[in-house]
Image 1 (cartoon, rainbow, N blue to C red):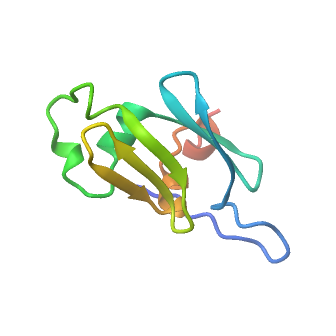
Image 2: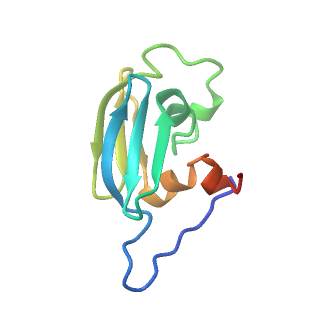
Length: 108
């Protein structure tokens, strides 16, 4: 995985710490980071990018595999309990590295 490492600057908020976690419509979770960058993570992509490593190998997501039952901002990262009872936990720096926006991927 090609991860972009964001280092905190002395006297500045850690860019890998979320200020806010919220739903974006009915398909995604949004994160506003402490440096005011906004990321949107569609549910199906979050499930496929689950840190457990097994979810990436799912041929096709069933509705219960791709639908969150609970999303919470925990001290150690973003926690999602899926409708099929699988649990995912993304450390915040890893979640930030998943952002595919033009600013994060070097696009214009």
